[in-house]
Image (tube, rainbow, N blue to C red; front, side, top):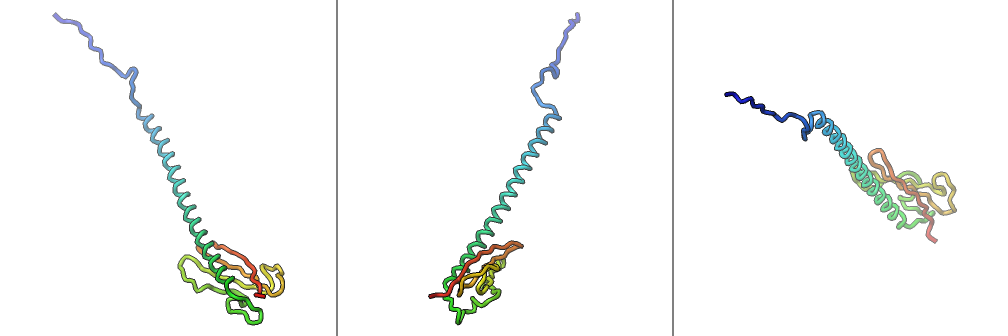
Length: 140
């Protein structure tokens, strides 16, 4: 006697899994997000490096300015640092070049009072520069 039995195989009805297409789309969206985060990290690192160079240049410029301000200026017998024209610092560093320009009686084409020098200190590095201007007067 044969019993007619029917075996039901549970099919894909109501499946709780994901299809391959859904997984690929999710991976694509995740990859785009990760690339955006990596790009932001790279930009942050570059900005931080640029800020470091700018800060070091500013410190060098102010240091050179302070050393020039500490020198006594006598218009009758100026020291070599105050001779009109461009000067280079003996500071040796592969990243930075420190120089200053002395103008007698002017500062960037602006007239100064008598017995005054216009001095511009420039620190240059990698196609960038930092400038600071100041006026040095004769000691009374």
